[in-house]
Length: 255
Ligand SMILES: [Zn+2]
Image 1 (cartoon, rainbow, N blue to C red):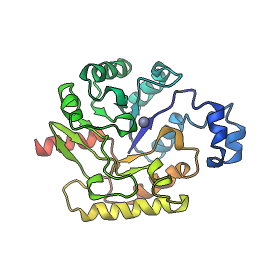
Image 2: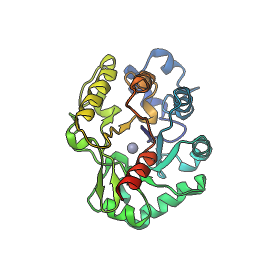
Image 3: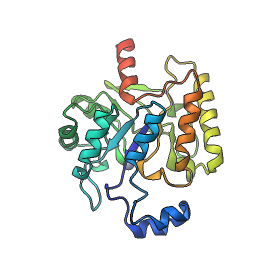
Image 4: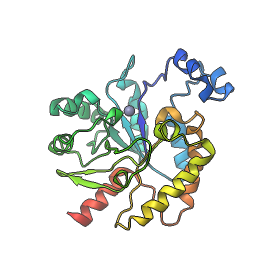
């Protein structure tokens, strides 16, 4: 379970939110100047705490009209509370080891421990990326996705790529709402079906990787995150993990 933090901490500009007002309940829009609906880290922490779940938050170091240092206290609180912090590296960095190294260091300054995980913004991926990440001490990446409008077999499980564990993105909020046109009241059902398909893969680790962006929690569709957690928690054979927990299990058993 993971969250990409795409927007600066102040949230999106009010004009941007007003232009998308159909995605929200009217009281969220009315209150948007007081509580920007694109910033939800404390809400995610509250919900996941409630279900005794820990996830991974991927932070950028480059924010449009913002500064990653605005997230210092959030990153520290998440890290202290047992959430995993990963790098949401910039698409312009993925071919350049020095740039990724620089981004990694910036986030590590807040956690005082090493960052093991990468997911590129916009899921930018190249076959060279795992090689670069491996050379910089990352353990896993989760930037790969084969198709946007359906969930193919390649979007589940994991793969070893040049020393890096690649967890392809199985379920992502934005793809469900746009490319797949899944109505809000069918989203939990889609999770249900996806787990069933994963169970049929019959591999040792039937991995389903989920992105629920920080900015969608108050949106129609995104706001059913708690229902998803409730459903997943009810499944006896499902373990909800941070990427690093699973990566460590795979490394221990495979290598
Ligand atoms: Zn992103």
